[in-house]
Length: 344
Image (cartoon, rainbow, N blue to C red; front, side):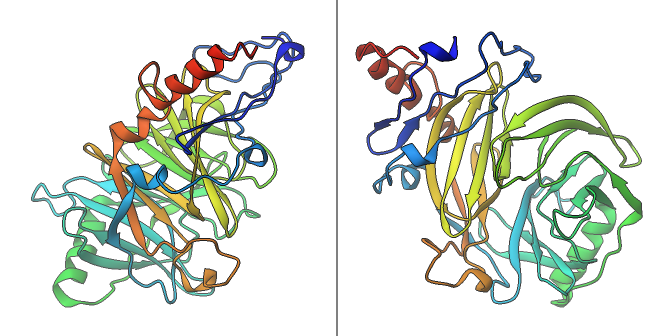
């Protein structure tokens, strides 16, 4: 729809979901494949138009989950699901943590009990992007956004052995990555779907891009799709059959969770406030787990609006209902907008 007919509107439902139309250049179309259309604006939630949302929205889906260790010295970052982590069919959540001037940690957490399964030390990295795909654990190799984007890889078998040693001895064994780092387009965040990995760039001011990759038997990544636009300040991503769900961080202020449909990836269908400093998310069965860095000691300051020292968890279907069609909160918002005869 032409920009000259579009009215920027913020509609709040139950004090929770903010529907924010996003302008596109006149004549631009959104490809159903999700590829970038001509001159896209990308998915952007205009948080300046959204009032501070009352209690009851985000907490209606997400609640405190497994505690995060080492917050006095290390900061949580990437989070992924590790199926059959021990070779006995059990699932672990693998959390990356960094500390400036020190080695980074890869921490195994039991999603059922919240127990720490083990801790593996590795060469220093920000670890904002982390995923388990096939025979490999793939992780961000860079320390900060000023370096050229690259990933490192660890054999799952070696990671399992190190994690089991940690569990048995109470130590933190060191594990070196295999081979040399591989350059990729961007590596600020990561999501895994089957044998695919989605990697994107974090930017403080503008929408950026993400790409889809597939891992070979040797753990090297090959680009297979994209680019797609991602919101500014994206720190985390969930990918489902029909939706992309992004988390964006605004320093010590409340974050934003943005839901977009993959058939129209440049227009958010729901925007929801989150606690401060959200990081990555991952799916385990019917549940979602989300990491936050706000509980780390380095963010223990008055300017941080909320401090999360655990992995937040909720039902995936409840999260996706925020951007669903008729019957979901997104559908209710669209119905209210239609009733107001507002031209979007």
